[in-house]
Length: 275
Image (cartoon, rainbow, N blue to C red):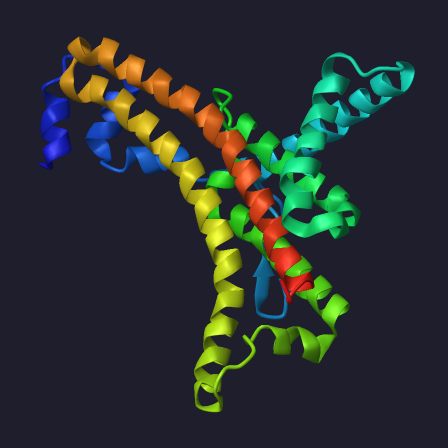
């Protein structure tokens, strides 16, 4: 009998959650892991099988995208009817001005204006997915490494494409090497700079994934203390869970900001290598 099961056996509560804890010490991971929702027939391409089934986290991405279209269409229609934005339209415009003036332009300069549609979409999509995951009964799409890796790969592709487009193919990769490097150090610098290209999207993916997963694990752990230690810890457990939940609201906004800011910074560095 494990340490956790020994605790649970002392709790005079007969509930499904307690039974789940007794049977599985990894019940927290079970609750935060992805689950299939709609099963679709797979596609076979040679020996490769592509599963198109919709999981809980994919469903959250779809719902977030639909909500974005509805809310932004309503906000745009509302602003067009008024000389001065009000209500939701005013709030959305304020957020867009923040992304433009405090995230994109400081990181990329005036060249960042032409990338605003991309960064607006990136920021608000991550924000919607993060907030949707805080709704009871929903799942957090950005707590899946596959989702965050997909977003990071998009930024990586944008970085390479516009870096090469602005500096030329050979000019871009030549610009990755600092000027004045001795010839005997050059092979080492090439390897380091190549690894640096890969670590940037890796850092983006891991940072968003880890931060959005950690809060949920802490909340489940605090709630689990009730079933491990008894009813006496309910006030403390609930109070700390609510505190972490409120903190998660801040983290949801902060992670959308950080991901967008770093994406703008990486693309800006690829375009303006001389800086």
